[in-house]
Length: 115
Figure 1 (cartoon, rainbow, N blue to C red):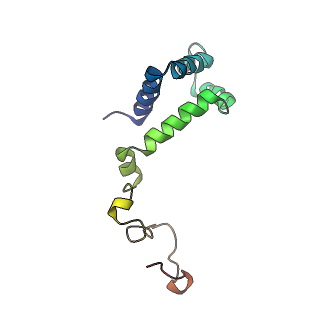
Figure 2: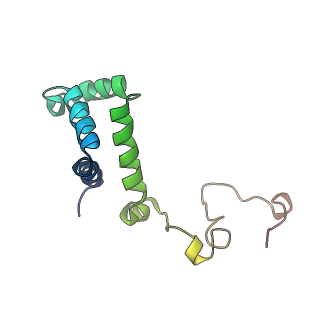
Figure 3: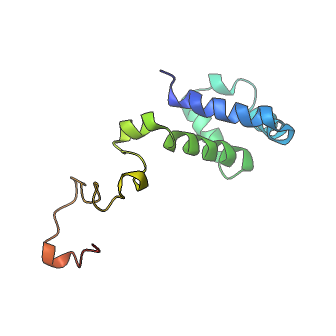
């Protein structure tokens, strides 16, 4: 199985392959990290990334990573998310109140049921 970080790389690479502008922005962003970035100690990499996190390159890679991660059924299974609910009748009758870490609310305090 491919690690999730690899899925994001493939998505970013796919964008770059399909658009000259995306490729140029990706190349410039990677170049801005500096030679040997991947070989730096983690603390130095984190410090460098924090310095550029508000920039377009960082935000575009961050957004793509989140989109890929949260649209993947394997990640859903890992986090305990059962997927979209519309085709299964919605969340109200299918797990809406399945949170085990919250205390039960007395029925009288929970308000009217919409069904």
